Structure formats: structure tokens, C-alpha cells
Image (cartoon, rainbow, N blue to C red; front, side, top):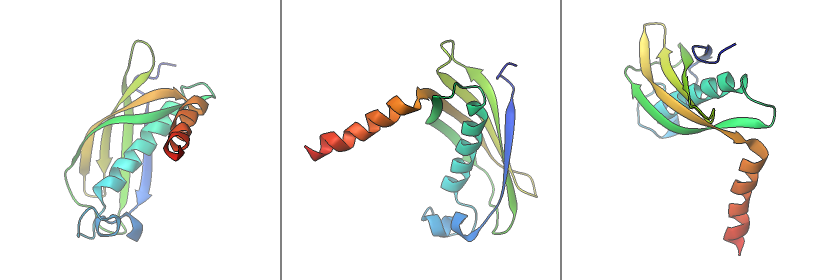
Length: 134
């Protein structure tokens, strides 16, 4: 099965913790943009994981995102990630993103994720703590 064209949908009810006023991305009591982007990243990550080896994962490397409309507390939001491209070497996945609430589209954009060996990637990150302590 080709990964190109495959998509995943994640649905979430907007809770207090997700509001812009509570994630400090504004004062409005509506779904915060950083939370919506995180939902999209989760959706893309879970989609890509189905095409990777056990020791691999993906990490976000780029997001181009347009948050178009507010979503209030208690409303369901849906994030759709679709694989639109995989680099020739298989290391970069590109996704289209679309988000909807009960009224219509609330956001769209693109997202890129890099394939990494999870253990090596974590080791590199952990080495930064060791270097910092010296």
C-alpha cells in the first residue's frame, strides 16, 4: 500500500485546558492555535508511524498553518492529515492539514516530518544535557 494519499482523522472536544486563554496564546476563551497545531502534529505523526520500521519515528520540522475561525469550549474539532509527498530518500513526509468544527473549516496548512531512528535521536538530545553540565 502506498503511503501517498493516505489520511487520518483525529476528533477532540475542546476543553478548558485547550483554550487560548489557558495556554497563554491570547485572552479569548476559544481553541488555542498552539493546541490545534499540536493536534495536527499528533494526527500526522500517528499516520506516518504506520509506514515506518519499529525503531523509527518522525519529528516535526516545519508547519505552515492558517487558523481561520474560532471554536468555542465544548465543540468538537476534527483534524485531518493526508500524506501528500515522501522525499526520494524516504526521510521527509509532507502532509496537508485541514481542521473543522461543527460549523465548517477552521484551519488548514502543510506540515513536514523527518524520519529518525528514535533511540539515536534521543541519545543526541540527551547528550545536550551532558554537555551543558560540563
